[in-house]
Image (cartoon, rainbow, N blue to C red; front, top):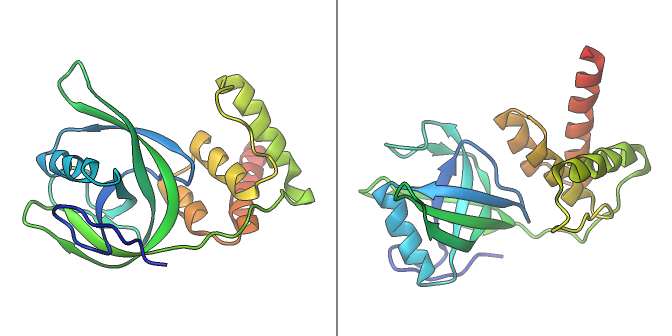
Length: 203
């Protein structure tokens, strides 16, 4: 399945990319502050369409300045809210949708990355395996402590559990990316389980 959208500066089958030093997961919510001209222009463009762009983690480079080298797999982001901050910056809030694979990319003159992408077909939700139930319990406990009653816990969806734990836990960027890329959901949980077990051993 190819993401077929048409925006002003990027043509059919292309996504503008927003490389970040973090990972956006499907159904995750991420607030962003936008100040560079290339991204202000990008946001203006996508808001005239379906308000979507690609978020990718940075493999090499920085969030500002020259175009960074992105990871191969990212997540479609849809703008769900925006506002002008007190400091004059544009604040937006995005929600993650499907994962995608970059098939090729180009750097525009303003250093905006634009990519052809292949959207990944996700399987139906899978329940937590019996051996990973403790990760569901961990998420439930963290959810209560973080006071997130506005979002319903989906403990019957293994991928969703993995993504939410990866957002909450203090994981390094490469591990967060590994969880995004891993398939099937049991592999995502396996990455988390090994990390949590390693922390327990250190304690």
